[in-house]
Length: 220
Ligand code: PMT
Figure 1 (cartoon, helix red, strand yellow):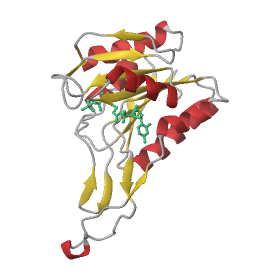
Figure 2: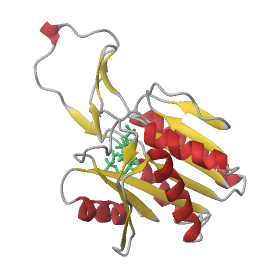
Figure 3: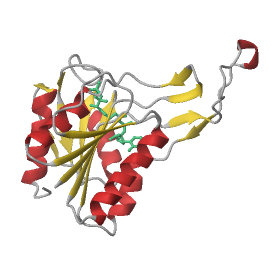
Figure 4: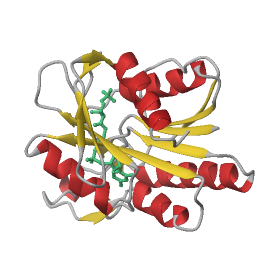
């Protein structure tokens, strides 16, 4: 069994010293990678820029942008499937949906900046993997949904759109939840709309519950 876990934020540079990003610290993803390694699985962690130590027994690939995260994740998943390994992807990363249309190779001068920033869409990593899965049954996909409004409905929509086994919804406005905290309150939302709510737990406990849920559904 191989786990591929994405974690942390991505950075979308507009020049070498400026970027668009978000407050993800990688804590949730690193906890998932550590839990999977403790179970004896082979684990690859694709990490955006974070200040965390690599969990014991985990292979880590560092990336910066969404495009790098896409390339690294797809490559690892393809290698795993080609080796005939049962593969589960747990996508905790807060991937930027947009990037600046141009990235200057040198620091932009204020006089060169207009106040308008043209953005282009990043490719969705999970949707890309979902297309790979349509002809590879040994690939299981679990997403995360960081929401502020209509948490469960938004999570259910993403679960359907991205073709996931289930999605882990968290309300990032709630105290002790989401970005940067050591705890999280999540709900597992399934493609048929059924929901399993968990209490406030440490991220380490949430990670173990995700693996147990995959196991209970016969995915691993
Ligand atoms: O890192 P921490 O500080 O511990 O914080 C944890 C967390 C809040 C980042 C985590 O719990 C979480 O909610 N992660 C998902 C954040 C998010 O950006 O969700 P989203 O709703 O934008 O994306 C939905 C899913 O699609 C996610 O699994 C995401 O990895 C994936 N995605 C998003 C964009 C993209 N281009 N490709 C993707 O695969």
